[in-house]
Length: 319
Image (cartoon, rainbow, N blue to C red):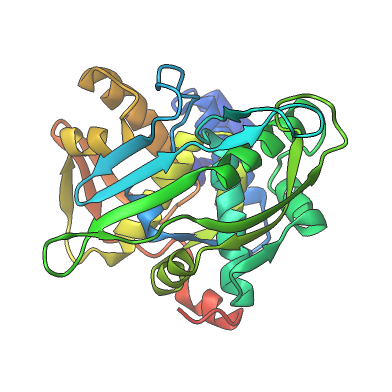
């Protein structure tokens, strides 16, 4: 994807669009990324590079049953939560959806980043959270704000667990839940969905310890450019995790990629077509990423980290 960056640097956004060789959304993402002069960075747990939340609402999932995705040795299980009904909360409990889409991913990035920066698993939200969401281009008002609050509720009420093998080849439980404690206050809106607003979140101790041991540094500018595309966010996190640690090129087959990134696709051909475009978006915000799409899959090549280690050290985050 170096072509789009070269054109943008030499001739600007309009010229890149007029070339008509690169998709407009890729040009837009690269331009947004390159125009951002902020050097802020964020963090995510490495488990998210292997398994991720669904991209859309799971309509056909039987009520109350968990949603899960398996990628290699890692399994992510998300058990939906319940909330009381009625204006005063005295009504019967109802199931809420599994969190989905870009917003819970952004919320989790914020929680993980703040926990790493403060060395504290209890994260206060409020104005700092709203400021961060606004900075990365997510409006706090109207339908967008309601959707963000709704996803915050889904995320805090669900039970989310990473399962992975331990050293003895047995299945180990990495963490019981991401959010160990959440405090809700009434939202000023009256709509039923998303009526509660998450004020404080406390990451579970197990997840916090795993996050500190295995964080993925990410560029905030990249997150901003992909903020409305959950699949591209997942691909960016995956590339940021894998590429810098490679000692030699490695082929990842389409079948393996579909198992990790394409659980919403029935046909492999449909996934290949879509994921190639998703990779274009992800590399638009990761200029140093070196990958090659081939008939068999994607060849991943050793690349510079998404965030330079010197920058992280200069900001006082020692990993």
